[in-house]
Image (tube, each protein chain N blue to C red):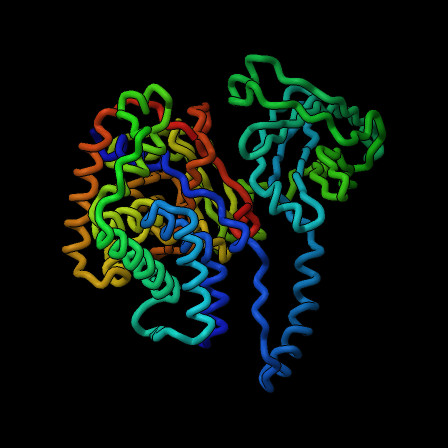
Length: 327
Length: 167
């Protein structure tokens, strides 16, 4: 029996959920101490900063595309309010553009649901575009390719239908809306010029994620020295992930954001991520440096055995910050 | 670190502590007791946590490990547990897709030192150095226990080779 086979068997033994007595919120009484007054002052100041952070909408994904007539498109998938990103921070996306049509899909992390629409864009002159949004259902072959077969297609919460939109003025396609007001939507912007935040047009680390940004470029994954997966793609984000069929998903970050699932397991240096877990050595080689700057960075890894690797065409990808991931 | 801060840390890590306690004892109820006692002891200031000797997590895991060890010793002193009447053979387990139970039983049959090394290394992804600090042993001894544990599990679970893992 190989180490890998034994590890897979051991992983079958999952721990039960926390008992009720350990699930209640932390309720330790605190005594009011003199230093607490100073702390309270700091807290009030911090709250002001915190509020501005919390009221910011977490972007859980973004796509850039160009139509045949040269019109540029940006689709930013946003969860609102900020805590909704705890739930949707790990959604996946897929899109394609042909002629004047852009097809966009977003799926849950476990690929148990997806929402898709097609966006048709025609320039109407004077900085206006005629935009038609309709729900779109991928064919069986497409679903097979995406490994979403069997997933439930969620009806769009709301779509603008046909309308005229102005250049650089975003409009929304609402994907999911919960009764409590939480929603996941795409913010779509059209422009005659390339967007400044297109990943390929800026250097690594200069984006909103700063030094914590990571990049996968044509990754090749080796497990115990053997090639396990490879892909021709580029993805950027504060976390990267790869999946192995039947074994689960591994999420990688240089900033674990205090998420207890991400444990320090290896290093990132230049174009190589390297870590050990469960007696196995994982090496991810890329064509471009994974993080900005030189030197060795700590790598935090969160293995999610509950998320099945699907053996799909793209077992690699990127996602939002670790701090916003479910715990 | 104050008792209250360490208590908060213990509470924040209760998921990890519970998992480790459960896998060391094989019992949810015992694991719950151990974690509750760990948090209570920390809050009551019954502990000698020294930040220079290791992280709060390692200290708390050591407390949980000691709790599980006490449980194991008292069971050992009471003699072997009676064999369950519905003890199933590996073949039958495989047919029923019960690899999970078989793994739990196999890990439970390991001697305690090997079990704790395996649980902390495989399930909690701790390094050999961290495990050595938690269990109070040399790194070499931990490595050797880990190898022996895996060899024993290979033998105990050999019947399941090729069985698809249920999730």
